[in-house]
Amino acid sequence: MGWHPLELGQPATVCLGYTTREGGVSASPWDSYNLGMHCGDRPEAVAENRRRLAEQAGVTPRWLRQVHGCAVAARPAAHADHELPEADAAWTDRPGEALAILTADCLPVLCWSESGDWVGVAHAGWRGLAAGVLPALLAAAPVPPGRLACWLGPAIGPQAYEVDQPVRAAFSHWSGPWQAAFQPARPGHWQLDLFALARLQLQQAGVGSIHGGNDCTFSQPERFFSYRRDGRTGRQAVMAWLQ
Image (cartoon, rainbow, N blue to C red; front, side, top):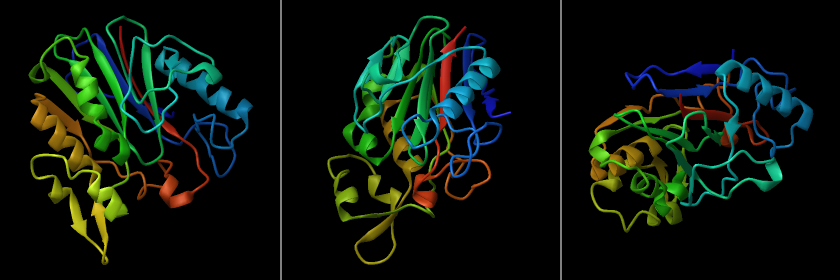
């Protein structure tokens, strides 16, 4: 099964989970549980994979049109793919609204309140992190960050993620030890740790509990799609909702 629920000690009202690439109907190179409509796969295959996800999770995902920015959608409604809200984060305090993020190397982040009445999701690649998508999502929460918890989902790991000087320069306005997330590689290039950058920003904001940050998409081809590894590939998803 491609859907994997998460048990992180969250309140019973908070449902969290993620997908892997196994258990769908898409053909290579999108094999097999591709959930992205925008990456060249047959629309019928993606529709079947999304139907399976809704059946396995018991909810219908609410997708976004992700653009590597910092816009946050509040309580997004269900939309057809050509009408999706343009945002890279979303939140809800209403039961049954399943918030979904698609990735294939960028970092997906799930957030929830310890009181179990609010959830949020974010698409946090380097552009989104530099733009402030995580602080923007935290600012939408009805409680202080110290009463929130977050999970860092599968993303490209630092051993596989080489970036250049313009990427590093995009974080020069940050405070704290952000430079530690960039380890020197060849001249003018660094190995970037997205997990470390996200943890730093969440910790600086005062988030009370941070989970995950262990799964590298690039190094697990049997489990995860990776754009940097494969180029033409599918998308996995994370979801959060209240029941």
